Length: 329
Ligand SMILES: *[C@@H]1O[C@H](CO)[C@@H](O)[C@H](O)[C@H]1NC(C)=O
Ligand SMILES: *[C@@H]1O[C@H](CO)[C@@H](O)[C@H](O)[C@H]1NC(C)=O
Ligand SMILES: *[C@@H]1O[C@H](CO)[C@@H](O)[C@H](O)[C@H]1NC(C)=O
Image 1 (cartoon, rainbow, N blue to C red):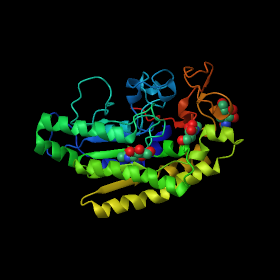
Image 2: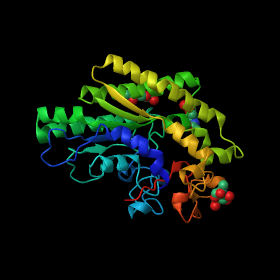
Image 3: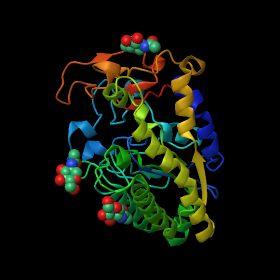
Image 4: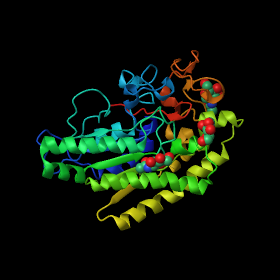
């Protein structure tokens, strides 16, 4: 049950938007789910790009509660999977998965390692701008599939979930000040949101950023304490994000958003793991060395030896920087 309590609020927030069962004839109130961003939301898009195993998770022990590794960077399902489930939708597939997509329930463009800036892990991930380009293709194909009017309606009723920014800050390699850098990240996010809006998107949902400096690999680098700088820039982003979104709300008629404070959920669990059903919020379940801070989970990223905990549900972190997800059906 580890993450379940953590995310119930998040889920409820979005299920208020997404409340009806899907069907092939698209009932009046059909709601699709379009998903963008990074590894928090990636259902396996990186399986289908030319990248390095650092940006993939399609091998065991990833995906255990899914029964097989799907490319999700966790032991099981991710937040969008739970949201889809609670909304009565099927699991929303990875856009790049080579199969015939219907798109009427939505599709997931997220890519592990991706940022809002093109430079973040450039060449290894699908950046946000490219994800938006794919979304525009989907919009075209939906119009072909169900006609202009129905496509427009579907897109305007749909919910757009976006998790992005962490990778930009974690790979910041720029002399720009934190403020300048955050405004670049949020500037690119704004462009992306406006593109979605232009195609009819109205309802957006975001998690803010977690305490980046308290990830196991960060703590391993700073002798057990959280890296203050990395957390500070996440906090800056979190302070600016609602301002950015409120500005869009003023500018764009009908623009609505829900912001989930994952930063707070994350801190609460780090500070008092047992209250939330975790036995260990210090060390990653899967990885090696201090706090599992070495990215060796699965043994396919150069380091073949790694430690794996017996029960991922006891652990808050699954690997060097990602969370477990243990809501069972
Ligand atoms: C976002 O940021 C990069 C700079 O990293 C830029 O090259 C890119 O074109 C920007 N715009 C969008 C829409 O992503
Ligand atoms: C940081 O950026 C500089 C200049 O853009 C580049 O030469 C350098 O390789 C980058 N370093 C890393 C670690 O990405
Ligand atoms: C967390 O798990 C690691 C690895 O098993 C262990 O070394 C550490 O003592 C545990 N921490 C707590 C607080 O239980």
